[in-house]
Length: 215
Length: 215
DNA sequence: GCGCTAAGGTACGAGTAGTACCGTACACAG
DNA sequence: CTGTGTACGGTACTACTCGTACCTTAGCGC
Image (cartoon, rainbow over all chains, first blue to last red; front, top):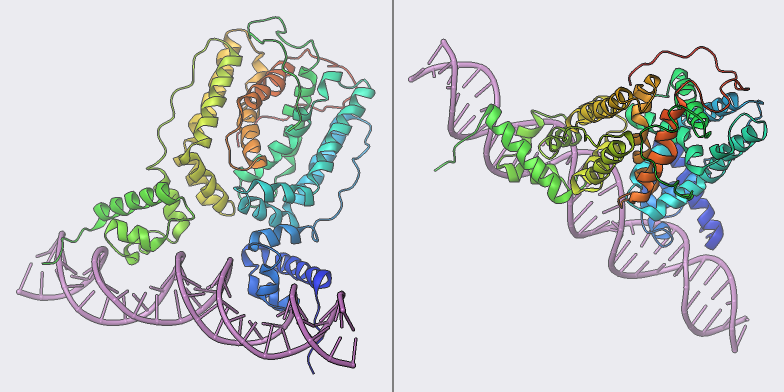
């Protein structure tokens, strides 16, 4: 009585699923190849035939954990929409899944290709698009100058949030910090990109504006 | 003929030095306790009597690698001083020493205490102070509104630079990106914190300004 | 000189990534 | 239906690492 022998896609799915389960049970640090193999009902050979190393497997498996991001909020004003987006991101990052994502990001920090795949699986593209959309709606409402729509501006709040996570250790970022990021940085920045602003004609020798380029 | 036996501080310095050498020779990943012990001419016992684990040793050893940060530049205008500071940081981060620092930051990301020690050894405090100083001088020159002096504002460019490193893999951040950070984010932000600015009286329901608090 | 502390030496436990080898089930061709 | 190749399952193994245990011996203060 030999058990049925899976092959190809079926086996691959079983491995990915087992890896995802190990990942959420023990984190990346605790995800060992032996245990993934055992949980998938196979052996390490089948894994190493498909992925070159543990990290690559974990990055692919992470896709099974991340849920689809919700559409951008529609609060009706820039501040509240930015805050909503930021709070949602904070919740995601501080969740168990977010902890795994941070673990993987750290582990993949010297492998650009895996980093890319990981960002895909984490839906970073859609998140960025959401920020741009929020800015565009603010412009349409007359709440912000058209120049505020700029990929680097849109990325600022998330970058600062990431920075807070890097600065602190593990725990989630308190809400006051999110409010401060929005009120002390994001909104002044958006405002400042209107042609007016303080000292628009004063000292700082700013040459012709460089053209925008998405990262 | 038994060799002389070092004790106390002398031995501790020898261990730290050996660890620092291993660190710069092979990075944190390649710094094994056995090799540190051998290089220091001692054994692992002497190390584990002083540090609880490999990471703690590496964090302390890192101090022997990081050089003192130079005083903030005095270019005479905000843009050039900010750019100088940012370029210097970029050079540091992309240097071999910077690579080790990033490795350690990633490894210590879930141990707030080590993270703190590491930031001390890396001179993050003085760097932050330099940004505040640059802002203060800009205000004194009449180049920026007094409200621009805010710890969170001062931290923005470094946060964005960090973000670029996290986004990309290893290589250094191109200079255009630094220029863009300054021109598209930092300067507009500083400008926007002048009371004026675009749509100062428009929609966004911004309540009383929260008080500043240093991170 | 004596004794306590801490050093040196060595060995070991426990755990992990990744590799090698072999027999066999499964898919597919003829 | 039979032969053949691929890839799966099982198991063992290499190489390496952190961290600990244990014992002997050298310094240092008294």
